[in-house]
Length: 152
Image (cartoon, rainbow, N blue to C red; front, top):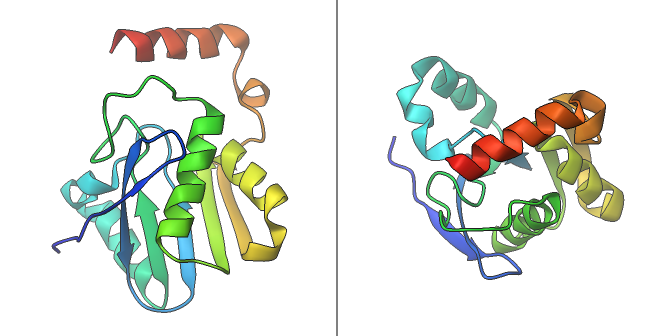
């Protein structure tokens, strides 16, 4: 399936790639840090899951800054930056009332969005996530992940 890529600009000028597929009530899926929607076609079993999920919904997905088709040369990968990217995609897609889903590392900034904008959300769907990274990982693990990201 050929996907039409749209781009929006986050508050700090970073270009974010996003897609809108399907018809029905809007559902925004916030990506995890290792996920790129532009590559989902390479995993047929995951693509089938999303095909079923798009049935009866308008699904909005995007690539995080620094990954996939979004701007790659970025320095700020903080939760504040990811939060503003989510806000930018929602605004660019023209959504006023929608559901928001998140898993793993997208949970904290999606929870923040829901807390800051309860009037805009129909539902918040959380899967296998946490409110704060320090609740799921030790400081040593977080430091090791940060060093890995800086090195590659």
